[in-house]
Image (cartoon, protein in one colour):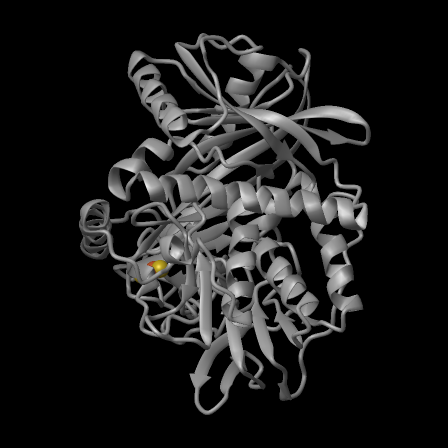
Length: 529
Ligand code: FES
């Protein structure tokens, strides 16, 4: 079959054929007990659990429910979060590593309990999860990880081969993990939440919090929701509250394909520990077994030509399994904290009204459910074994400082290098559907020509803290390498921490009517499109 042919628009498998409920936009000031911001697995589960505890809960979603990271996941429900246990043992200690595992398994059991309780038909399948190595160094890492499993009492086996044609040096299984269809599961929880009297508003962007006598959540349309507690379950915290979260996490993009393979589909969930990382799991679509092949992570805004990543996954899929049919492709953005353990808890020390849950790396299904459980305990005043380990205000100097310095060095480098970068491309070089950084009147600018041939030109200075955004050719977005903000081709915010859109540059396309604010600074002799 021919590869690298253009796929259709990036679309995750999970949204296909799903009739998700829709909700009104908030159009007036209101009041409630708890506001939950973010309609992914964390927000929906938190809202549901709190409503179950008798709380009056309002959930605000900036876009549509389940259209963010949760809608773009690999949906592995597992405590095998790559190579993590040896590392946590080393940096936090044995007790903390054991707690991390216990916390993830508690979350997995919670998902299973809810599926059973409401008889949710969501393709829930118990399977073993596997890490695999293709190099000797990778094999040594797996041996160390296995030692950690043994110390912590994690049920797993060290092996050598996998049930498909990749030459491996080692594999490490974790028993009794699971996979499911996340949107089928969560749409059932949405239904239960609304039955309990919970309110949901879509297309309602929470933009700020005022901490007065009551807490007030402000929306982009100028309304407020007064409440006692607010929980930020948006991917990047929508409100920083002096927690400086943008400097304590970094964003990575990764890519996924759903294919119908030529070879038989192996049971189990697989993840490589060597580079380039590859994630493999099965799924079903209209009764046909599919493979989800993921990988190609890179820091947001540093992926160069992002289509390259889909092509690399496609090559791998074709070589390993054969491709009968290519069905879906999509990408996801994940946030990682400085010590790889999520931030779940009070936004700043002793704040008992604003809570956050973020930084799940790529493991949002268990971490998101866990966050919902931990935050529910905070709100209802229950103690939890796990609160301390996940507290956002923890400070572990060793790994944190090293990553903190390199992350901020990265940011400083982008701030300086981005500004100095010499660009020679002009907007006239752009074909329909193409975007690139161009030179506009001697300055760096971002240009995109849409499918109708209209040109959109933006100032590439990120409105968060001034780094230079880069074009993401696979997603048609402008991505910031510093803290992961993303903007659409017309500059609107797709993902924070930025809150303001990129500035439009007023130009006039000589092939067309004025595009934006038809600029009087347009000089046809100087620039041509
Ligand atoms: Fe922070 Fe762009 S996201 S500078």
